[in-house]
Image (cartoon, rainbow, N blue to C red; front, side, top):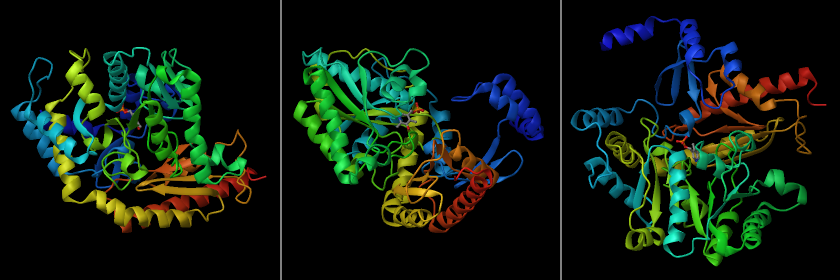
Length: 469
Ligand SMILES: *Cc1c(COP(=O)(O)O)cnc(C)c1O
């Protein structure tokens, strides 16, 4: 059976697979007809930080899949953990006063690796579902406390919190809100802490701008009335929005504002969790203490789906001591195979000392490499935090002027990356990376050389096409 399946995959041509793909598979966040015309690139296998497509091309994956493969591909310990758990107990639920050993042990381990206010976890199957849980949970918290009018959740423009109804509503992506009648009621957005777009032209330093952006939160709380505001949610560093790294002044001020008005503070750590920023969680890097923390992606390094919400003592005590039944949960809350893989994954992060590796070694090394890429004529700004990095492509390096609206410079650059064996993502004019945490210095050199080549090719296109005028 297995041999038959494998040989079937191996003997199908790329063109045959592409035809079947466009005949049947509707891809996420994709223009279906546009993809059908081009045909998708089929990824066939992977090891460490590299992928191979169905034509045998080797690709350096500087995006960790979709921000998730923190321990890199091909880690046998995760494969073994999944196989062993599947044999012993592939599934049991946690609804009917039952539990499984991996779910219990993962809850215990998460309480250990997260900041000290977290002793409890609510499991989901993904980050989006985790944020749905956040919405239900913060509103339930205020209900139980006898303040049911505290319903409004404040988020930010250009945030990404997933693609379910609540996740997309919390997110601040205008393209997503334009489809499906979003956002749902009781969710409102303030401007993002993006200095280049919103602070630079006012002549503010990054630090001064960070305080200003935090005060947009206080302004909104006061406009709504603090007695109506349930929570503020944000990614410590916006990922899908283009790796927007806020000034160091931002999060501590946000914390003070939430404290002053009794508003719950929620950190969406789906990308920034599990070592990405050089600490276990992004809130530690950014210096704040959330009441709730959403996680997914890196918790299993993407090998199997898992998400959840860490519930801090402030919320947990109310829900446990006074809440009664919480009418919420997922079939796969605490899925034993996912939890077994997460246990192996966190074990490996510890064993390989990946958090320290990012903080002390490859994080600072990447920062230096990006500083040198910042000298490229096409790059207006280059920033990193841990193993997240962004390069802003500009038309004029001295003024920082952007390319004309009809020039999709990011997509041009991304095309060169695709053609040169590198996965780097474009978000507007920002080229972004988040490589696996196992990356070495030599591999960073290799990645940066590829990035430089793609920038040169993009610059040549811009010169040839007259886009620099
Ligand atoms: C990816 C992501 C999500 C959504 O997670 P899914 O597993 O895709 O549902 C939520 N928040 C952030 C910050 C993310 O990057």
